[in-house]
Image (tube, rainbow, N blue to C red):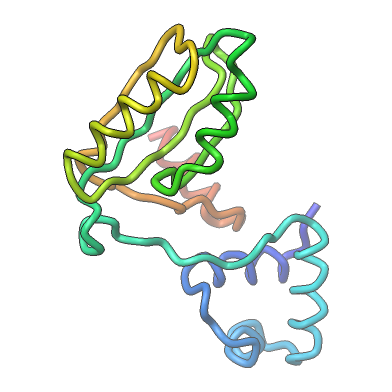
Length: 159
């Protein structure tokens, strides 16, 4: 279980991954050395690194797709290597529910997208493929573990 200060630090980092340790300390009203210790404990507990959330459209990558694929047993390793090494893959997950992999890919233009789809089909035996084109981000990377957030949600659900 995470302490209240750990939750607050995670929440602040989610809002601004570049926030300084001194600003975290001021926000939490605790010494900078304590923030540093908590940050190191969070790294041990699974905080990989604070990351920026990219606006792909503004960066020139107007085509973003989520694709779920099922592949033959013989092709799983080959497809995994193809997806892990492909520069247009932003996120990659091993999943269940009848599929093997779910991934997000970003492309600067239709030609790149179509070449990727062709290469994916030729990379291995794809048994099933579902493609979901992203039209708009409603919200991303929004989850927070702060208790007041979950109580707001449960009160909204009961209304």
